[in-house]
Each structure stands twice: as structure tokens, then as C-alpha cells.
Image (cartoon, one colour):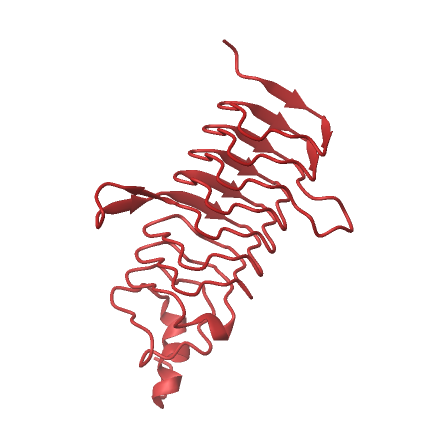
Length: 221
């Protein structure tokens, strides 16, 4: 069977709840107030799609959906709900995710109670004011994202590539980032006395920002 393909379609108040949309492909489609809760979107692909109506603050509902290896490219997902969704291997490239809610969403494959590994590809996306509290996003590709104002409280991004990201000063210390790549990130407000930085990678020009809170003056070579 060929996977379903939809192009230039508009869906308003559509109910996809619980449906099998594995491998479905949507291109230049618009979804307004649509319900994808508990749908199976494994390996589904969305390109240049819009999930919020201009001028409204109500996004689409992906609560408890299966989004394993689902792909979203150049999509507007602002205010979307991903509560409890299974997001292992999800791909979000150049997307607007402002205000999206990932509460209790899982980016990890749990092997045992204490053993897990994560997979997510979230790059060049706007995550301002998104809710990622307690999210496990370890060893993931998370480059060039705008994180300002996002709730990262208790999140773990250990070992992830966070290079080129934009963070608010108040976010430093709210999430774990040991072993991560922080190259090209403005580190103003990051105090190494309060934040664990073992194994973190930075560029040479960032040393000054990191050492200033310690009162150390970095002289030019």
C-alpha cells in the first residue's frame, strides 16, 4: 500500500484522534484546531505546513500521539500541544514552536528503569516560551535554536549539540548541560561556580564570558 499523500489541503476542526497515519505525507497543508491526540504518526512527514490560524492562540493537539521518527520541516507549530507524546527520533527543522507544550513528552527509549537513550533532531527552530520542563534530550542534535523564555526547568541536555543556540541569562542553571556543545552561544550570565560544566565545549572567544563572573581578566594573545 502506498502511504497517503496530501498537498495544498486545508483541514478545519478535523478529528484525526486515534487514527493510523503512519508514513503519511503532508505538504503545504493547513491545519486549524485539529485533533491528532493518540494518533499514530510514526514516520509521518509534514513539509511547509501550518498548524495555527493567524491571529489566534490555539494550536493543534498532538497529546499522547505517537510521533516516533515523525518529521516536521518549515512548519508553524506555535501553541501546539504535545503533552505525553512519544517523540523518540522526532525531527523538527526550521519550525516555529513558540509556546508549544511538551509536558511529559518522551524523547527517550527506556531500556530499563534507569537505562535509556534519547533521539531528537530539533534545529534552527524557535522554541521561545515552549514548555520543556523535565524533558530528557541527552546526546541530541539541538543546534541553532532560539530557547529564550522556554521553560527548561529540570531538563537534561547532557551531551547534546546546543551550538548556536540563544538562551536567556535566567535559564542557566535550570537545566543540565554537562558534555554539551555550547560553541557560538552567548554565555552572558552563565556562572561556572553554579552550573556543572564538565566536558562542555566552547570557542576560544567564549572564555572571557565564562571567566568574567570569577573576576578573571582574559588578556589578548
